Structure formats: structure tokens, C-alpha cells
Length: 160
Image: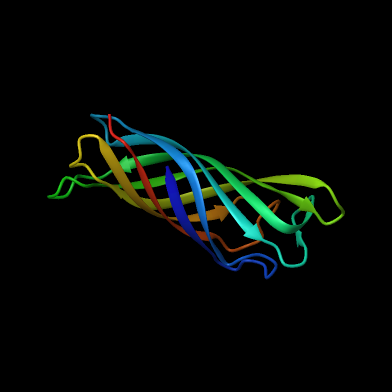
């Protein structure tokens, strides 16, 4: 389970500048090598004032942005308390869904990349908390016409 708060940089005036989001992530860190991989899904619902245009659609009212991505992790040495810092880089697909300005529902799809850092508690045997700060950029202007998203997220999960 992941909760996040995103700050859109250079967001078009038709959309919110910041918004809470939710999602899920699965991370795997190997026991030996300092490398890991993760898959994540995040959802943000943005209010639209007027009409927001993507490359293929024009949306009104509310816009749902779903991000589905894959990240690679590089684990750094644990600190004195056993917490493990890490770096991440990845990307994936972003899909915008909502009411179309001309009526009906529609969606548009584009790509994104992300890079950031995080820390995961290493002292707990079963419960894992992770705090991440990342920058999310757009690979194309098909969905997002902003200068990027600065996102802070907190996830809670299970260590096994």
C-alpha cells in the first residue's frame, strides 16, 4: 500500500498543481547483490477546470491518471539503526481517463520516466515502511504537458 503527495511543476492551469494519490508497489532486494527491482501502480484524480487537452482527447470535470511502472533499485549500506537507503530509476506508462468534452468517456496513453531515492526500515522483522522522494518526467507530451512531478510517498508492507 502506498500513499503519495505530488507537486506538479509547470502544470497547465486547467489542472490541480498538487494532489494526493494512492497505489501499490512490490519491491525485491536480493540478499547478496545491492540491486533490486520493483513494479508499481499509482493513481491520482485531478479536477479539471474548463477543458484539458492531451494529444488525442479533450477532458472535462475530473481526470484520473494511472501510472504503471518498473523501477531498478541500488541499495546503499544500512545506517547504524539498520535502515537501508536506496536509489531508484525507472519508467512506464501513464494513462489518463475521464469524461470527454464532447461527451462520453475516453482515455489517452503516454510514457514517463522517474528517478529518486528512498529509505526502508531494516530493523523490523515483518513490517516494512519505505519513504521515497522522486522526480517523474514525461517521455512525450501525449498525456502530460508539465515540467515534471515531485512526489513524496510512504509505503507500508511486509518483509519476508
